[in-house]
Length: 156
Image 1: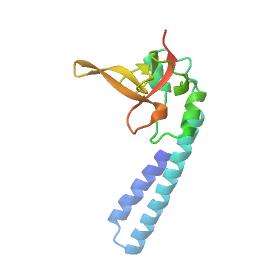
Image 2 (image 1 turned 180 degrees about the vertical axis):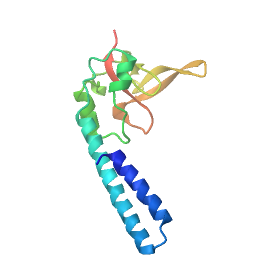
Image 3 (image 1 turned 60 degrees about the vertical axis):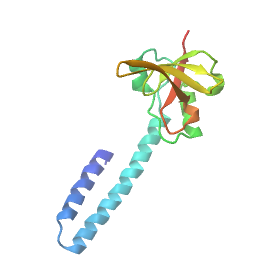
Image 4 (image 1 turned 45 degrees about the vertical axis):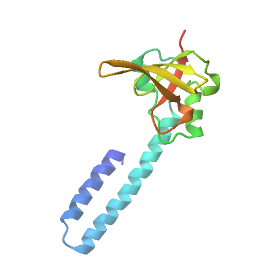
């Protein structure tokens, strides 16, 4: 059974438990719902691992549509395992960045950013409510709990 089916089944069981007057039957339904919840969590973890094990190669991406489609949303927190998976499919590690170079990549608000080695961050132009200003963002290896930039190509 896939996650959606499990979630629907669990919701139906919880609804029945809400309406059940017999305490023994109610407890049985709640237990069944708990078992389903554990199965949902287990299946979600399997799906996430499969997703990360089968990331597409990012080296051929040339436009924003490809970026948003193929560069994965980053989990919190990122681990060295995630760094390895990203690097394997073409994300550029910090050790290979060039100071002052502009990179094509992905973060929530931009697809281009300039690496500043002295500050250990990227800068990009943020467009918000008709205003444009510089904003800094960390490389994905420097996860600080906020948005991160995943560079996939150095621009000429």
